[in-house]
Length: 396
Image (tube, rainbow, N blue to C red; front, side):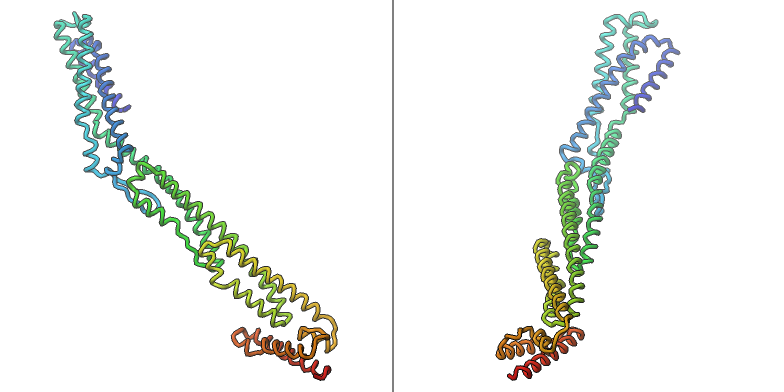
């Protein structure tokens, strides 16, 4: 617009100088108001035409038909379809009407000026000749202004600018996908520590939506914004839940390590077997599948239950070691090993012995570690010794 105004002013100045050289300066000065009004009307007509076309770009989805959009997974790229934009940016009719309005306004204004007698005695020519000269000057300025305005090219530039603005706005929303990259990396880190296969893909849904709604996005990004926010919220929730699960799981494994040392120190096979059962539970695929299925509450309940059982085993192991640390007679030791009291009947002693011998027989530890098998053998020997000792002193 500034360039156009500068051009018109330059042309007017040159015409004034030219007319001054031919003695027609007074005619030109009287004509200037008419030229200003006609050029303003002409440019207003073109502006309204361009505004109407730009409005149609947004309101009727026309922009989606005249630009080609490509999505690379992170942002949109676009380019104008030359054949489509050339067809849409035609301004012949608008140009015709703007010239017609401009010339009509010149005729009306100059006619009024002429009736007022402003063209009388301006030059050596008659009033009508002065009026014709004024018409010619005005029409020349209007034609030069319309040529400089280039309605079609100006509309193309406006469409290009509008398309760039809209795509830029969409890409601003798509930049939030970077938040998903960060959240996904955090989720993968927790999943790796937990050694679980956790579904981490929040971007695919967004990419599929953009690819299938590229045209609609040029006029409305509401659904895209909702989808991005929804996926970010889901990712944040998964990351927070996985972090809690990981902290709880690490605490459980730490407790297991402490309990394993204390339980193995006792050499008590019942405690060792319970401890192994808890270990199988905490490392089982069924437990970890709860995380994959996002069953957070169920996971917490199971792990907390295992931790309570491990804490119970720890207390038993400590008690067992305290009792075993006291000085005791062989008879007290025998009763302790068989986990019975002196008032237990001979028949009960035989039954308890058979149960313990069956439970701690080394053959039952064939599928365990060598350390556990060795403990089972030692425990089995202790049980046999305790039974034979009591059998000897009680004569049964």
